[in-house]
Length: 185
Image 1: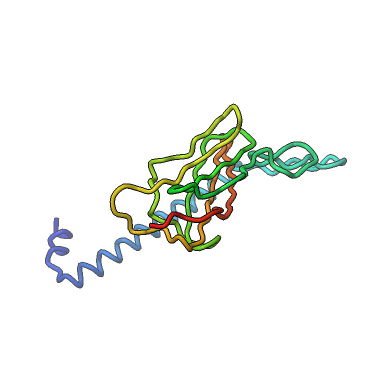
Image 2: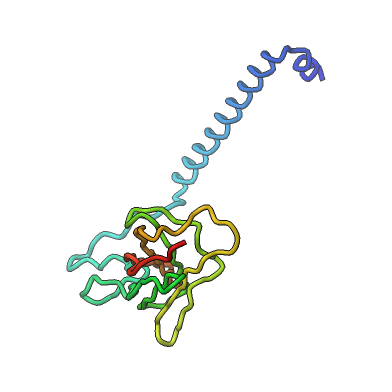
């Protein structure tokens, strides 16, 4: 009780110094406990084991990453390809194909060329349509309702970038310019 009364009697600056010192002491005690645990466990033989010595011959191949093929080819067994991107009247349309066990496809419309910026002109609730039997996808970029921060420039350069996410955790993407003339608005 005398310790608490003594602490409460300190000025604000003194309380901050004491609190900081206490935090440092607790951190160092935690760190010491952690390293002591590591030392005890390693001396007890608990932890990662060393790999067995090589018995000669050819070493086994490294594990394949998700989506990699066991064949001699280094090409992965998943892919996404944009076949066409074009302006059709008031909307931009992208179509493409994929290879692999697809989970989802997501596309974005960019203004200003390949290294441009995403624009706020299109309705983001319109998502990509996927045909799993044909392994194709398409997405229409249509104007969002209401006021948008961005407008389509009929003389602007637009790109579409699409990403596919596969069930084994892999991802692939593709991008291409949108052909044709954007709507005048």
